[in-house]
Length: 315
Image 1 (tube, rainbow, N blue to C red):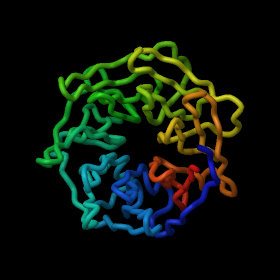
Image 2 (image 1 turned 120 degrees about the vertical axis):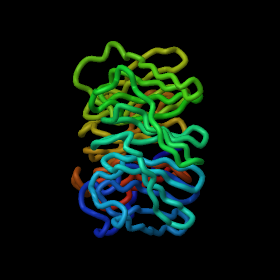
Image 3 (image 1 turned 180 degrees about the vertical axis):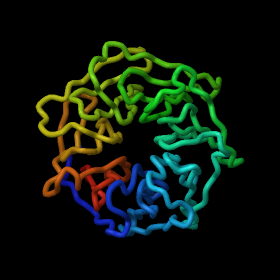
């Protein structure tokens, strides 16, 4: 498998200026982009190569609405960041609706993404002192307390599921939160030996190893679930700003989404070697993406400040 050139798909100026979308999710052959500051949900159909958009300003007028999303069957659920509701888009009808948090979580910057186990969605706590839980069958929202992580800002920035356990990655690279959905138990794994002001903006898992997405640092942290061990990969011989917002797995490679960087970082997990894909002809601000999805040998980058969806084709 080799890398081919990148391409871009313009999305239109009416969708907003800075901070348009923060995350994306696939439902069948469609990609749904999570509205952050934009008042539109953007949907891209990869079969027709066309966009559609759903105006949600009648439901929500604030900025920083949602951060991340997850699909359950044909519905997309948007994680409330500053919004006080969970957004729901029916991908069959393009109908948008909301689910109340019932006053169980308040304030801004609540959750930053979500994962699902069976028909239950678990929202990743950012400033919130709880894990948000949505039963998608009953449309009932509840919460799970975080114990020692209570009253701590910027708790987690990413989450994933392995063996019915949810792993939450901390912003400061220093810990993993683990929630067992079958026992309803939460614990913290301390990641020792990490010095400095490193930050991570998410995680990916491959072969039962968790890879942390680097934010302005030249190292990737790797946690082996089976060995309960930690290692680091130094990013060598790569020039440019190493600031990434997300990562996505395709085959044996992990692709890191540029946040304030003019390049896409690629890690081959068999050789632990890095490659880069340059995004030419644009400023770093214009190349700001948050989130990505992989489908049909292509990776689509979710536009944050960018005015287009970035596309990487894998051949």
